[in-house]
Length: 234
Image 1: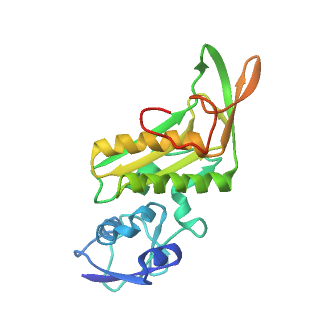
Image 2: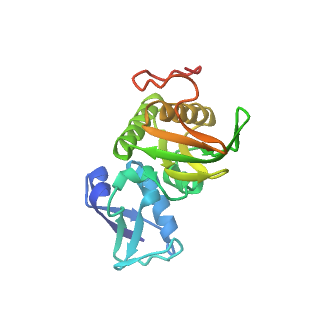
């Protein structure tokens, strides 16, 4: 069956049209529809993880079966749009969520980096960490890193999110997900992403110890956001 999908906001801008048509098998689900959109319109693939599907003016679950006469719309977030892949949040982070954001039919590998709060650093016990960020600039710098990665590894899809506020030991502070065609590229691009994030994204952490506290910066040397990260460890 052939269905028409209405597009809005950032989706319509990306596709350069307000609706797209797809051919789906009978009894196709919303999940099948999203996979078909990602395959036939790869320019939309990076946004699909944060979108919802509406059928006949109602939000539809992933297992909802689509009928040939249904009115279908693909809805981006009310605010944020493409920024959903790059965010600063005080909510708990999920690696699975970022994997869904970058997964696409052209990717043979999805690498995730999950940074957590550890209890001991150089023998000193951390009670908890407190993170602070210049959020608007941080999001823009995350987008810049993604653009650098896509230039170095064409076709790579990137998502990164960082948590702020007080985090206890073992809680997730940062998640980076990179999808590429081959695994070697995903390893290289993933390492590049987290090192550049530490280098140029304005996020600070305060280590809270049993006997004091201290604001900490990049652990690989003086913070210099104007320098370029190079593979090999600078």
